Image 1: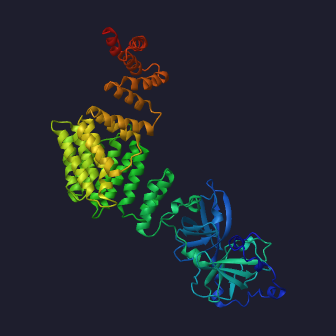
Image 2 (image 1 turned 120 degrees about the vertical axis):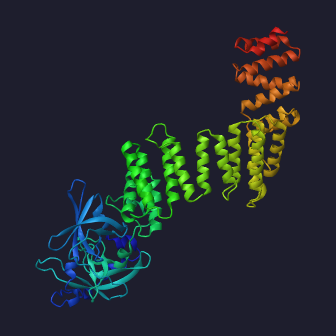
Image 3 (image 1 turned 90 degrees about the horizontal axis):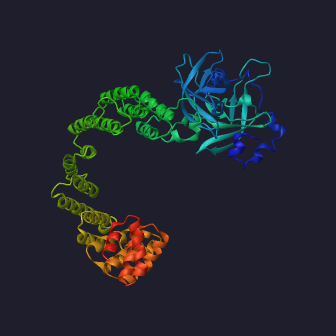
Length: 577
């Protein structure tokens, strides 16, 4: 009992049992009494034939057209490994399948679009009736093949509200995916896969197949990824754009190309298709691919409508991606060209994001004054944020002209202030990172006492700090400001958080030496020398401490060892003794 129905409804095994001989009489040959509306039913059943990459036939199966414009319904399983397919009518006339419109592997259903078919016989679809019996047309002219009425013995809801029928009829692969009709000649259901041993037939509501459609996320669905045939995109432009954006970020270059080409075929007037294809060509990195990208840029601009600024902006970013890559250069795709495209975008629509991109290019070119001016434009716009003020401070720091330290601090003050304007989750939480950045900036420029003030303010804002590096950084500024007790406290906190960090131990020893606590420094230095016997600083400091404590016999060898390794300071100490 390996039908799809058994896999989906395992709780209904009784439907396959207990059927008496009375039911066996319900399916009778009625070829001579078929209603007039059903006379065309035989013509509505087509054959679908699939082929592998070399053109060899893979599978054959039943199919039918669900619309006059070439929507073909058939078995998903027939397309395993298929690179090409065609629908064939009763007279042997074939038409090629163009693309997949929807698919479901569980119910073994696929909806396809074929090329235009002359004299296509499509099946009218029933969407409302709930018949008591369904018509199975005979296919072929062999003796003993009849049209039949099949009695529905059970109807369940499946697949999100669609009907799933159980009918009295022996199964068999020859019936798989055949359409079943009502009295008016409308297709109601599709026969589900079965084998000769089945004594019941199962059929899925035809509406399920008709409603199948690719969705925005289908490009990542294994059901679709397993198919080699071209896949359609959602008919809705917004949903199709989602598919396009997902594809452009995908690692599979073949998938990217397939989706991009399908988008351009489906939406030839939309700029995004051409911009995406340009990016795909640029990723290939050859001159011929760059030339194709240029052609796509022209097409994107031609279809920009009222979004020309967006096209110029995307072009600028794509050109910039080549300009910054020293291994991929092409014609005049340089920083100047990228800036020119941004100027065009800005002229159409002066958005701050275009100005910021210009500023970023000037940073790359180390033209810091120009970058500063662009970023100040951004700061004065509604796009100004703590981060843009912070980046402006970094630009001025890189410029390093007279007065720029004071200017950078003022910019950092603005970043802190801007952050305090955001109440969520709290002004202190928002502004704390920028206070820390201001402290680090001050420390880099030897403004250590002001830096300590900001470090303290940061700690006050965030509360408990469990990062050893923070205490080490503050200790450095405290030591430079001769705030030795605070420095000792902070370096000990850093050690408590990272006891195996030798840098912190050496810093503690050095602090003790600076304040003449030689006895406190010696045990720390002995541990360091034992672990790092070739370290010049540890040997020199340990020797110096012993001498200061009046133990030259123990101190001199450490100084001599450091001097022998090239420590000039140790040699000077030895000469002064």
